[in-house]
Image (tube, rainbow, N blue to C red; front, side, top):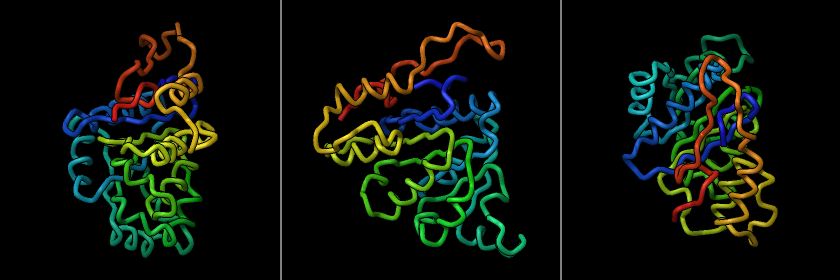
Length: 225
């Protein structure tokens, strides 16, 4: 996939081993979207235990400020804004734990009515169980964002159906039958054709053409079990 001007709804799966710079890759992608005027409204969803570190890294390394929200913070915003207003419109760039948002029944009506320029969901392996709160949350968020970045150290847990569910968050049309597909060949061939535009020879914004090169850490290359 490429963060290209021709790609209006970029989708990335960043599958890095723990400690190999997953947050840096996310920061680079977000910084490029912001530079291109496509990262005004950003939502980052992470596990609670890495939320503060994630926020710190994106600020200190990329100067991307994120407001950290928890259940108490959301309730405070709701008390301060006019009745009926969406609390998630109060700040343009926020970071929230998955544990806070997973109660989709409580926040669904707000999340369904807001559109993001970019949504980042860390630890994407937690999204793959159909019927779970996190899976329901993911399906709401992916429908309401232009750019989607899913990250995780082990996106493929060895179960084909689980991986098919994860890929469907990136592209619902990628896998017709979760019970009958070849994740190593056909899926990535289809995703590559769909997501990676033809080579761009222009130099928009005064830079050399930017494309996300083929890498074992993206959804446009082979998955490593």
